[in-house]
Every structure is written in C-alpha cells, then in structure tokens.
Image 1 (cartoon, helix red, strand yellow):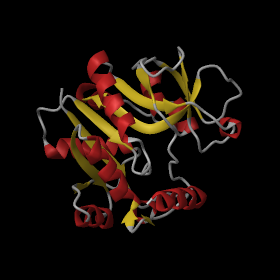
Image 2 (tube, helix red, strand yellow; image 1 turned 135 degrees about the horizontal axis):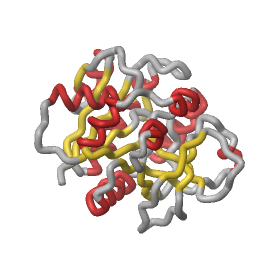
Image 3 (cartoon, one colour; image 1 turned 60 degrees about the vertical axis):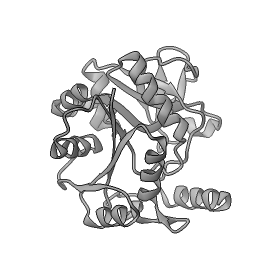
Image 4 (tube, helix red, strand yellow; image 1 turned 135 degrees about the vertical axis):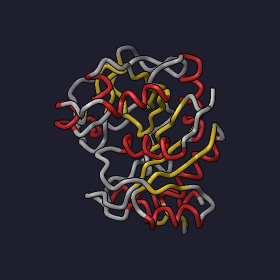
Length: 243
C-alpha cells in the first residue's frame, strides 16, 4: 500500500498568529514538521497552505508545497483539495500530519502507517499515556477515550474525543495526526459538520457521528503541540538545548 503525507498549514491561527513561520534552531516550525515527515520515509510529503509565505519558506528549505483555497473550515478539507489538485491515482493512504507538531516522534509516524496497512482500518490516529494529571482539565490538550486499553501492539477503536474529562478509564493524550484511506477521506469531506464537532471544535467527531470508526495507535510520548506562545517557547528551549 502506498502512503502520501500532506501537512495542512496556515498563518491565520487565532491564538498564535504566524505560528508556522516561527523559528526553532533557525528553521521554521512548518519546515521542521516537513523534515520529520520526510525522515519517516513512508511516502511523498507535501505542505498544503493558503499562504504564499509558507509555500516560499517550505520550498526554500528543500520541501514541497502547494497553494490551496482560503475558504476551508478544517485542515482535512485543505488536504483533500491538495490531493485532488495533484490528481494522484496510485495512493491508498493519506496521512494528515498537523503543521504544529515539530517534535513528533518519527517512529510513531511509521507505527501508525504500519498499523493502517495491517488492519485495513478506515481512519487511524495516535495517542500517548497522560503523565500529568493537570492535562485532564487542560482544554488545549485533546483527549481520546478508547473502547479498550491502549497498548503498544494494539489498535483499539476510539469511543470519543474530549477537551476535558473527569473520567480516567482508557483516556489518552491525542496527537495531531490522522491516516485515512483515500475513499474514507473523500467520504469524510463530503459530510456536513456535525453539531458535536462544532460545539467541541474537534473535526474527528464528524467521523464518529457518522459511524466511521477511528482506530488509535500507541505513541511513545506526547510531543508538545504548539498552540500558544508558552508552548512555542517551551519547545524551542527543549529543541535548541538538544541541538
């Protein structure tokens, strides 16, 4: 099976404007994500964006990017437009890697891809064990509740996705990456946004609300996704120290 990784990105994030172009070790966040995806070596990688500045930055750093419409409600709509524009016929899986995860573990990307191939699942994603109890109440950290315990060699189904929760059973830190079969991606973008999705600001709920199962693979760790300036400064410090 052939996989294609598409990274949706835009400058107009409300909480941290111009986020994709903020630099860590003299390289933009979006170019860090591109390089991580490339190092996973599971297929071609492309950034899909509504901003010419992001296209220019990615290309300048040796990556590949495509300009898409400014009217998309979600990142999934954006990656679908990019996929259609490229008119690729021989791809089985599309991986949607969020553009604000520059510290995502390459082995976790590979593991998700392998689980999708073996299980023939419709949609797959990643989650990690929550180590800080404060994360349960932190609305910026999305949680996934799985039907069965999440173990390294398992690929259980998601029961729900939440922003805060008092439940401690089978609840994990959701990581911003999805892998779809091409048919499921096409089906998903044609569905209307569900009430649940709009209320919780979580587009993955649209799949569950329409009886499309999402399987969850175990990730080794929870990378810091960059939503706020605090996230950016914390991750910058870690990545620059490692370097």
